[in-house]
Length: 476
Image (cartoon, rainbow, N blue to C red; front, top):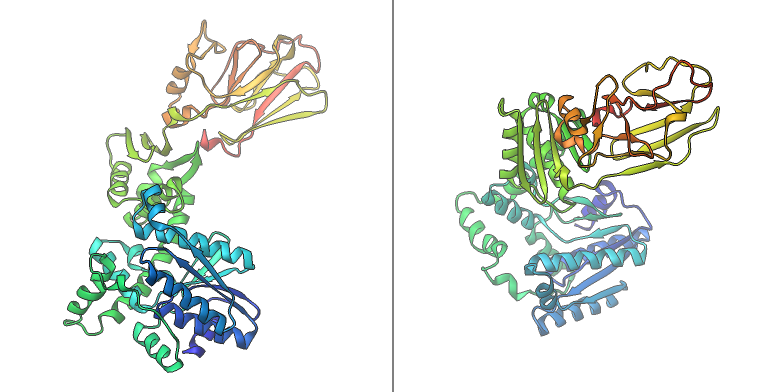
């Protein structure tokens, strides 16, 4: 087994000589076997193993005895030892988390801290093949998808560190036999016999019962996890490609091209939505199946073309003709404003980036008398003599009105945006160019006002040309 672990560290996890590895050690048979195996490999290649133990304080003297066992064994084997003693009942009461979630949160935080202090890049956890089988069966009973059936990952990033599970293909029986053969001491956690914990009930009751029908059930569940893991990895990559093709970031959320999304297979549609929801809700969030299905149904339905649905967590889905938006409610998002205090001198150019809408405003002077007709909807000319400084590039405000060129009178900016079929979810992002008197001069891509229009007799160098970059027009 020592050879298998050494080969796995090198070939599977890319861990070479001289590495530093933090081993999470509870004192049970699995983690003590892992500690012995890692130390045997470290002695051969000059690596350093650090034993890290958390005393959760749940079982009084039994927890203290486990901590003492790990400390004494680490000392006997010449391994650095780190201990965290945590009043978990108090932490659970303060946070409202259940005991398992609270323990996991504090345990992994401690392991990351130990790794940083010792300059380690790897944290080893002692999950084994039987743990994998239990996890897969639990998730099958819950009705998990392929991601859930992939079970416990062999490795994953944990912030700037990597968390590995070198025992994941080794059974509990093999580990117990290894401990007996090498005289590895270990403790037995009395709580593992309590079947009111679902995992314990799966291990002690469900698996033994099902093995009456398939004696190789555990191996079959581990095989299922490996097959599902490969499928899941491939589908995740495909979903990310689909997301890149059919969606763009917009206003703290995502804007989707409904036509493109409809063209994807249902499996990709679901995964795209999961990627969006999990990304918006946080790194440890998991989108609910019902939530994903509701969104997919709205996106792929022929009618209605316009819809607004609260999807929970402060997020909304807006379906607007050929596009949809998933993210924070637009009317709850803050506005923006960028001041242009002075206009550029001759031969200079001033740039104002507006990250909220992905556009860049560029201000420059025309060298001579110019044709005031713009070359595109993303360009406008203004007579400097009629501009009141400072100018500003800002988002829309309630009650905004504009006096469009060619129209006798004023019009609400909201009506201009509605007439142009700018989706509701993007209207708060649309930039307005405003002068110091509060006059709205230009809505790039849509309308300019009748104010400060250059005249044939405008002085040379007194005409200001304003353009918007065309790199991100699709976001506004």
